[in-house]
Amino acid sequence: MLIEGLYTVEDFKQEDQTVHATVKLNAAHDVFKGHFPGNPVMPGVCMIQIIKELTEQATGKTLFLSVASNIKFMAIINPEKNDVVQLTLTISEEDTTVKVKNTTSFEETLALKLSATFNILA
Image 1: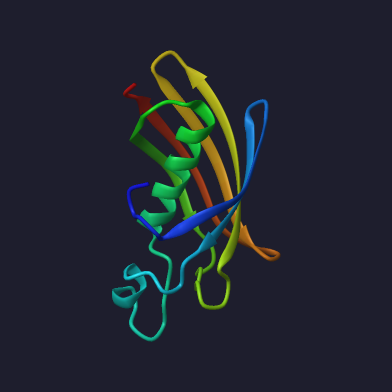
Image 2: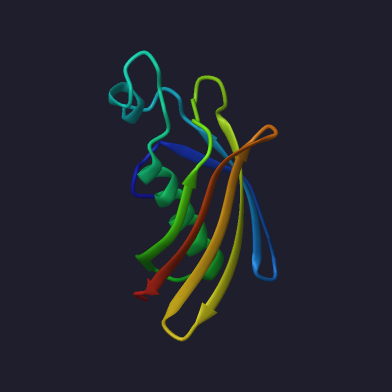
């Protein structure tokens, strides 16, 4: 885990090429002290890192983000109000790459949609 202590995986279910994961955010983590003081917001780059790490867990491979062709932040994730998020990842592997389509939500709110390609490093 690159950002130690930022989140914990509470549930991880993999069915064929689809992963359903529930992640609990640590609202007390230092990253939220600077992003933003008094009004914490989950940084987009941290969400992308979580998606990468969940994809690595699903594939058992070390990955490097090469293309993020479609990223849409649709709602702010405030860890003090919504500290549990659900992620759905559809994963396909082709030669030396892994393609991922993700949706991230909390409660009934869609917060993030992402399509990305990761290069397989190991």
